[in-house]
Length: 391
Image (cartoon, rainbow, N blue to C red):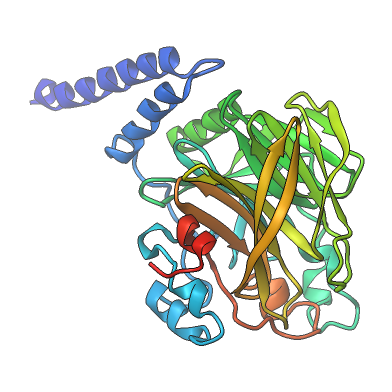
């Protein structure tokens, strides 16, 4: 009887050893996207159980307590008609960590502020920084949020299922992480650091390893070290990788209608090519390029704070040597308040929002609650926004 009970246990042990052997061969340096897909196909097939939830778990539910339809219905249908009419509902996903983010074995942070979003072959990546340092003494929350600023993070979701996988702690980095951009040619994720005027370079392999280790060990979060970066000559807010170039845009804090935010262009190694490629509108938070039927468009996300609606600027542009030149501005589309970074993949225009984080929605700073809060990554049609039509 004892031997019969041992057989299934031995079988599971042997299977685990074989699985680890396969992974040891599969997960290696410079893993191409096709092999990365194989690893995460295994996750989706259910070879790994979901991360156990506990009081310290990173939240994955809607902090607003709304379904997708409820969120869409809460927005002004007239003001955001073009925005709402171009959405892909099935591509939306809840931004993790807005209620609480696990930052240690028994430690959580409830002051993370989401900023950047980028899409890889298998991941949706969302960056966030700890906004606790912004809480002023006049706020009633000041005493209860006097903890030291936590390290910045990247939330990782499966692109196909849009399910949360893990949180990656950027070890030793408490900077204001902003926009993200993915270099699919070299499998590198760029991270804007507006505190130090850096663009960090994080290998996709490091993210794969952190996700895999986190789930194999049934632990959340995972950890990576930021080591490689290049300095830029402006305050990096918006990042975009397009045709083997890294575009770095800044965000000047004013409400002028003039173009006064520089966007510089660099090689993937960080060599500056142009002193002033073009000027961006006020409060630029995200930039993305799209080629639609032989025409190149530039999308610029502009946020004007918690009380004023955001704007998606759409430009017709042309490529000239290493530069991008604006031919004409096609339109402006009203977006919900506090729209941050954007990314484009195919006809999907992803946008990230900071309006539902505790800092702006409670609000922790005591200034005022953000209007039209959005606690999801929302996805619009690139071609419809560019053409000014609805889906």
